[in-house]
Image 1 (cartoon, protein in one colour):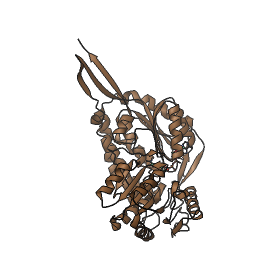
Image 2 (cartoon, rainbow, N blue to C red):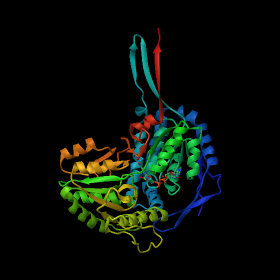
Image 3 (cartoon, rainbow, N blue to C red):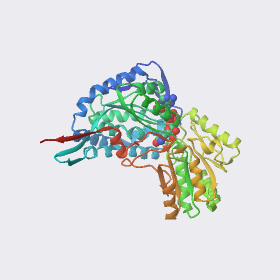
Image 4 (cartoon, rainbow, N blue to C red):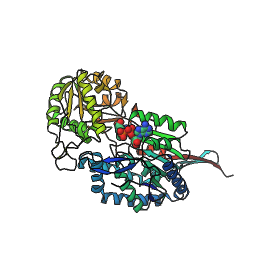
Length: 482
Ligand code: NAD
């Protein structure tokens, strides 16, 4: 299979590195190509191209930049199925999930099309007698993003549409495990009229990221991935004087109150835990039954989990795809083993699951642990696989205490019919993205996305209005003409 190329100055070019790693379809084991292990030489070339493209792009009127994004949005709409199929092939998630994620990505392009309004400054006459004050938002130069494997199309689209809409130029380092969707989207961006050098793509892993973090030509960096790497990226980028937003991992608690509508709750919670094979930063992980909700919730969650259909995400009717790689499968199985050893009750065991016709697939069947203690590894660490951890809380206070013991604070949900309980939960819970009778509390493109505590390092979050602030400087002009 062919070795993938970097996109630099509007051309697809070979990496300077001769090292490459195999890209495989996690459902079939089929080879999808070779991904170059890029390094500082590739990053230097990409940053040089982005730097050269910046003066003309920042001087391009915002309405003209927006028109390029309008054309890209139309092209993306026309290619949703093609991109979603690439996402399923490289990541494993079902085609429905992949389509939904591509559409969520496109919503960021739509939002960024509003840049002439979004980027406006403010003004006030006579801040003192005869003195006026106004602000302008200006782009800052070259930005970069480093993205994870679980949303190959969507997560990169959280960043670069806003960065280039505001007049910056960009270098993307997609996950080396899922680079294909971004390659296709960059082809479409080129077709839409994004000028050469405005968008660049470099393949690779740690070495390429380290080169981005240290590069003096890069003004700011956005990162999404696991918490240990997010923490490292935050510290290293700050050390080099860059703007940084680093989104990390999660351990999301879902609280089911005794008054919850159990039919709807179980359907939603099952999707939350097992959608994308649990490989979502917003996945439900610890399912907390409050008081009398606990037993019926657990029994019905186990029953619903048994109904999931494991298989190749491209096949109709499949509701649970493989995990992303053999290495990741080992990691998930390790957590299941640890849960058993530490005394959690394995109510449904997905180990050993297989799929006819896919002997090389990285499948883990739906798994449900009962009586998970916060002291257990599976009660504390992010598993990032199709594993539910059920636990009991006495009441809402007890559930909130369990949530606050976690080192992560990305998302959490409550299922209840009580407005009072929902309000109390929203008011008190120290977590950033909250679902009320919603299992995956994913903010849309025009709201901020990101957690707190060990799930987020920085202050300005992804997309929403924060993106405009992250990618621009506010210039303040104070004038007296007398
Ligand atoms: P990862 O941290 O392994 O990799 C993310 C990116 O960092 C990749 O591009 C990778 O090449 C690079 N990288 C990996 N190790 C590195 C190192 N030592 N130094 C520098 N760069 C390195 O994450 P992943 O496994 O690709 O993705 C899964 C993680 O992402 C989960 O923890 C998940 O919760 C998190 N995630 C978070 C959000 C969010 O919004 N908070 C969204 C999606 C995924």
